[in-house]
Length: 346
Image (tube, rainbow, N blue to C red):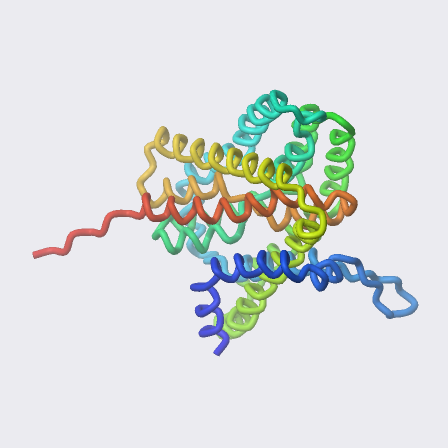
């Protein structure tokens, strides 16, 4: 039953995400309520429930649980694509963000688009999205390479995320540099570890040590819950950004957020595709590397913005736009780069 539910939802995930965005636009109140921290009545402790990080942890735990651990051995023996992907994961933000900052300084915005740029930095500094494995599977890509890139970028994120934020913060003005520095301290101080690394590592440990029968039962239970949690998380994040659109429309901000997100997304995928071509990777591996370069964990960046910048919900607009655009681009990439079918023998 759980397997059928997961399969049913997976094949309708794109439409479900769009529905989550629409629901956040029309009925944001429940999402705004879920965004607020809730103290738990568990004396003598003073615990607080944060819905968004909890849902993100569930999604990443499920991703770690489904890792084909034994398939990673072959990847470690041929690590070219994995190493290239990790280098590009750090290099592409350092190339794309300064170029976008240069373009934004030519706009009439008083702070040179620093708000939009802050949001994009927080997106590209995140690890490779776990959802990239789903697109890799649909495009018949190199799944071990993609899984390795998701895991490696996630486990390294407590180091790489603060470094990228600190390196790119001088591009900002109007107080946003200090804002990004504070966000970097939060990421370094525990967010990346507790909300990203530990859940993924816990799932990976379960995949390693649990007997096959127990693991299968756990996967069939957790996977549908994680997919549903991902949709709720999308709704919660979108409510913070879109909740004020109807009451206080800002069409110029919306258009600028969409344009900046589209430019960063397009450049990231293009650079990944060019790198795959220069490395002369086979079609399946090239597809996985290209996806990894353009698909960042936008949910994690949205949760980080919510946790560290609750007074700036407008920064979620380009993050949400990027989340939608990267899925659209991924669909086109897996279609174009899908390996050609092997001709049948006589």
